[in-house]
Image (tube, rainbow, N blue to C red):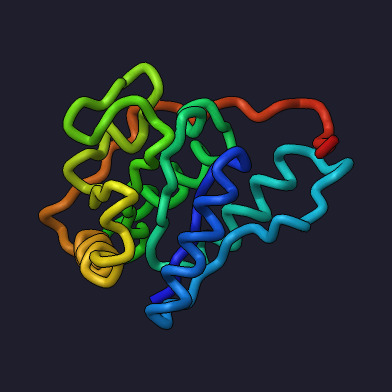
Length: 170
């Protein structure tokens, strides 16, 4: 099984910790390296790159911070993971980060990724504090849902528009 870590750069510290958790459990993963240089590239080229890497994985591990809901590339990654028939789509684990002001039981829908909430019965959920202890179970459950016809995915929300300007990281 291979895992794609989806995150907003503001949550990079959690991404590094998630990588350590996956490594400690010998789980293969991909996360955009912090030193990946997208400078001068179009948002569409970046989206194509990210979604291409995502399609090589089995499960999307989405780190949900304060601003994740407003990030177009994360939105496109979630959309790509949900697309396709049973066996083509990816499993999804939504990880609620402690920097949010809500909880998984009291989600603020104004600051939560819409596509994840629209698929709340498909996504496997975890609070950050439980991720290390439950990672294998979470990933296996997410993968099992991706290949089970009982679990359907919803695609009623269009993807967020990508910026038309070139990307610069400074």
